[in-house]
Length: 288
Ligand code: GLN
Image 1 (tube, rainbow, N blue to C red):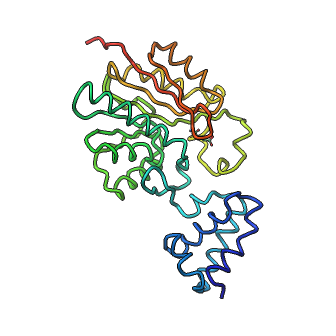
Image 2: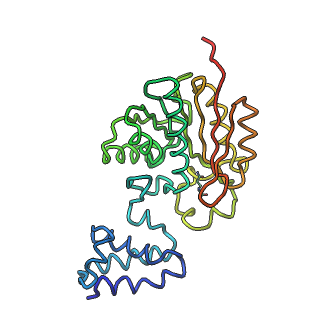
């Protein structure tokens, strides 16, 4: 039987589909063994049981066909925790941590001005990544996590339970539909923003991910636009809307926000230097 070291060395053909093939192989093998990656380096000479070797080969074959590691092992690291993921939800991306970071900063500023906890909505929560990151970081804030997919909402709820995060309510629905008027200090969203027919949809992990989490009409802008419009009803005066968007959409999204009378519209770059998210403040008082 192969040792751990031999099994990992045997994964080198993955190099043809993945730049990170060694890491991929380690994550897959650790998943099969039910151990952390460090275990593989501590016990390279340990022999795999036949069933483990077979399970690993099966995962390597699926990876070779393009299936993302996160779906194969059902786990993905985000912020300072790990989430369960499945094909009902988008795999959380490192770029999206930028949205969390800015939400915490803007929320803290607002809390300093207003006092008390904040009401925060995460629209299209998927695995729950954003809502859970914010809720864990600020236990006195109240989160509402919304998704149109029951499968996604079930998973988000299970993730929050597994991490013992108590300050999130889960609601099935479309964007702001389930939120009361003038109820939110922050609205955060990573909506679908890839245009249908975009060539990226057949690349990398995207073919395996749910279309409803990726693709939006009007060159990917339709949902960003809907949230911008609906946010005006649900944000408190002085509340912030934060949205992730596509690599070439920052100007269009800033224009949408300005047209809808949002103020203090600001774009932020991701680690690749691409403008990837926008924040804007709703400054109008709502009529009683
Ligand atoms: N960031 C993802 C990608 O382009 C898309 C995520 C989304 O549509 N919200 O790979």
